[in-house]
Image (cartoon, rainbow, N blue to C red; front, side):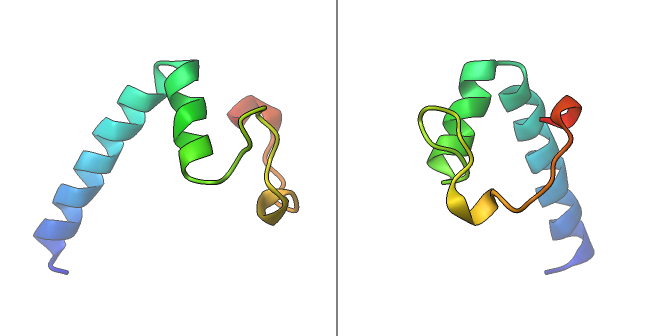
Length: 57
């Protein structure tokens, strides 16, 4: 991947992050669809060992 393509992808991902982070429902749906949390909001087993401070979650 060239630097310009990487920069373009990074910009797209940043815009997506901003859009998703505006809504708790959209954020939760993203995490559920990605397989990181359950529909109840609990971390899946593969991610339970990761330590994330609550103020960042």
